[in-house]
Image 1: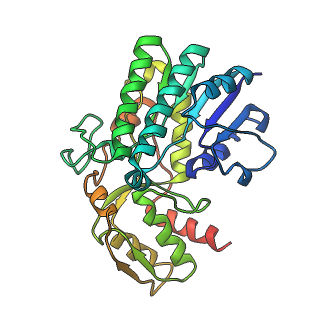
Image 2: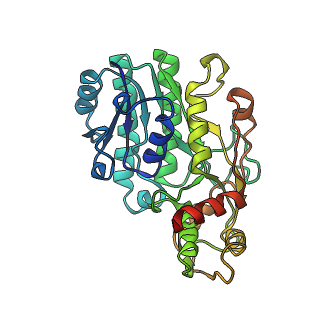
Image 3: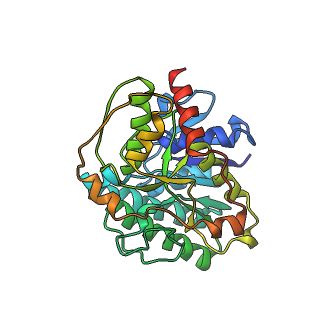
Length: 311
């Protein structure tokens, strides 16, 4: 029986994607892989250690498990990528190429690979940034993801591999602690507020960035993955976003639920990364091609996150 393979299953997106997939599939349909952290995932799922930098190991897993679909989530994020750019290149670039090449070689039907707003550099239009824009990323994360979009197009045109992807904005989730992303301050800030603790923010008070609640992101990921191939004009470049806010605006919105919540701003190296990214995205291509749609407003997201964190 053919299966769905998820790489990077133990990361921030992996668990949330799994929950969304389980609305349509059983646990026996899904194989979870990561280089570490799999012990945190329920044993009802089949799990395997996988380093996506090892082409032979990827091929073996695909062959032995009759993999039909792949969600390739394994990645080094923006902040950690700047701390260790060689690791970020190795995992993000070589790992992505390995997944695509092995998929072609072994007849995988469809591959989803998320991209990021990090593909845009400081030359890009800052407000309502369209799909096609000046893209000269300045982080290793952005460089590898931008190149990954081209690789997806290459293997689609050269080999007919059905590749699909989304440029995720900052993603917020109450289920997974913040990791190594520049936008992860938002999750951390809400977590502090839910625990009635003050927060020290590593971005400036007015550093506006596009954001999205994880349930909306995952619902739209599956919507794109299941969309008719003929309706898609792009492979890995679709912009999606729910709303834009700065740390100061988020703090003010939180105070509606946690009066007296205090934030101190101490910008670090992540501020420079944030300044190179768009403030808002034009999502019209995703709306037109596969019906991108959101459910949560900023207020609804904060209320839902705080409620679940306190529970």
